[in-house]
Image (cartoon, rainbow, N blue to C red; front, top):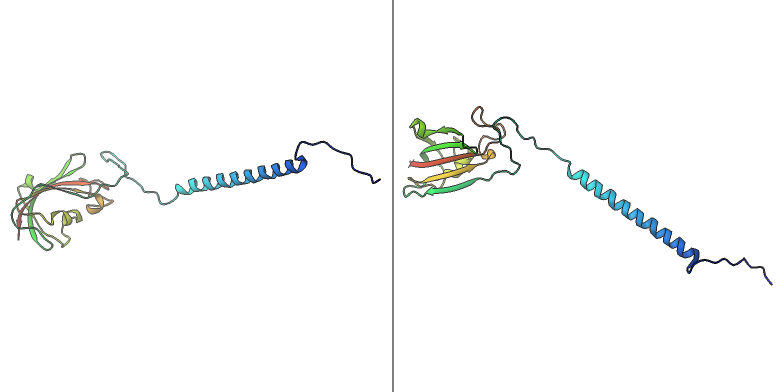
Length: 173
């Protein structure tokens, strides 16, 4: 008779089962570690990039959502229509979003004249007066990038200011 190893008693599946279970536990831990590392990297990189510097100071309201250019016809005129390259005469009042008036041709009793498309006025006016008819009144909401930009126009217009204008078209030449 050949000698045999003494018999050992192990639960069903024996050592092979235990080995397999340990390998699966290690794989699971590696997968979880990889997942957590990837998630941490995604979160870390989501905060990277150029950070926008926002203005601060008294009287400055900062919002992260950029205002949109808006045109609201208060009264549609029935005269000649303002088009690209038209010379126009208007009365206007300009205010900041907080209601502070910064300019008004009405207060001076002197209408303002300019030619559309020549860059004589801010871009928001170039876009906002086109299509008006003589006798018409229009409200314009002009975001800073179509007005005086990042710097504003001190002392009356702060940096990144959205401007509100009430415009009346008096004449198209």
